[in-house]
Image (cartoon, rainbow, N blue to C red):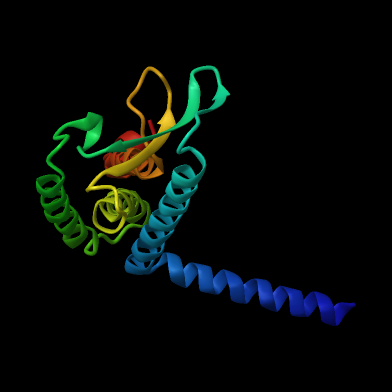
Length: 173
């Protein structure tokens, strides 16, 4: 019994050391979060495209799942200009990525990774799905434009960036 506890403790210590090493490497955190966001986004969009093509699913109140295609950006700005929107998005993503790889703090890195992952999730729709440059949106509220998990990741990432960027003197107040 003692040997089992000692082994479990060693394994736990080893896993903690790996996690600590992972969290100390902002570039690894950036890469892992970006990959996770893109993967989850693309999986949910595939389900939405397959299951919501001919129906809307009511969740609760005004919240429902409804398949829509958006050729523009936020709030359908630039609709119908998918090639131009794609080029602008790629330039913006590249600039954010060049900035993000120099960040040293984990929380700020996670925020930028969520923004980059969400942007790459949507650009993947434009480039690799046969939707004529449109992004798949499926979370419908009735009072807000229909969106997807990539959009949600971008918004949450921006909030995380704002929180992580506050001066330290205001954090404790």
